[in-house]
Length: 262
Ligand code: NI
Image 1 (spheres, rainbow, N blue to C red):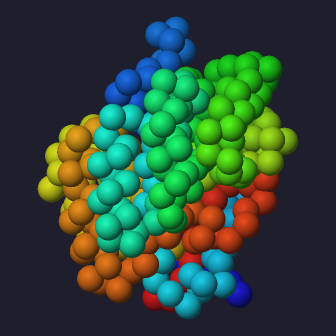
Image 2 (cartoon, rainbow, N blue to C red; image 1 turned 45 degrees about the vertical axis):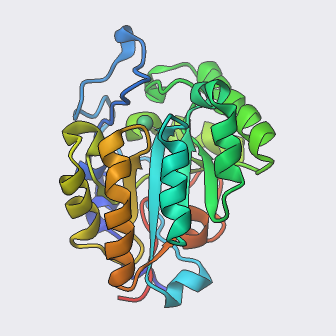
C-alpha cells in the first residue's frame, strides 16, 4: 500500500530539514577539530537516497509510534526501562559502543527487557561524514561487535550521530547489514532539558508512524517518559520498536517514519 504519511519536504532535502539538524551529545562530543556547529548541516545539500516510508502489517492497522533513545547506555537506563516496561511500551535504543563497553550490564538489561530493540549509534559519536571510510567502518563494526556480544541480538539499525550522513555513509552502513534510521519528531531534549517541553513536543501533533527522537542520558528526558507514554496511550497509540513499526528494513536505505491509519 502507499505510505500514508510520507513527508515530502523531507524527501526533497532530508539533510537540511529541521528534523535532521545537529544533535550534540552531552557526554560524547567528537574531537574539537571535527565538531560540527550545532544546528548547521555540515556539507552537501544533495539528498542522500529517496526517502522510503513503509509500515509493518501490524502498524498498518494500529496507530503505532516509535520512541527512540540515543546516546546510551547511561546511568538512567534502568529507570527508563522500568518506566517503559511497567506501561507495556516498546522502544528502540541507539547505543554508543564506548558507553556499552563502560556499562555492559545496562546493555544486557535493555536486551533482557521485553519489547526493547538495540541499535547502533557509532562508537564515539563522530560526525561520520568527516571521517575516512576506514574509520567509519570501524565505528560501525566495533559497536556492533560489542552490542551483539552483550545482547545476543543482531543489530540491523543505525542512526548517524547528528543525523549526519550521505551516500558514502549509507553504503558503508548498508554493507554492515544496517539501514539508516532518522526521525520525524525531534523533542530537542538535549537542548532545552525541560520535562514539560519534552512531553509537549512528543505528544502534541502525534501521528501514526512517527519516529520520535529523545536521549536516554538526560534526567529531564527520562522524567518526561511516564507522561509521554501515558498520554500517547490515552490517545490510542501503541508504542513499538522501529522494526515493529517499519517491518524489516533494507540495508543502506534511509527511513524517517512509518505509516499507519490516520
Ligand atoms: Ni547522538
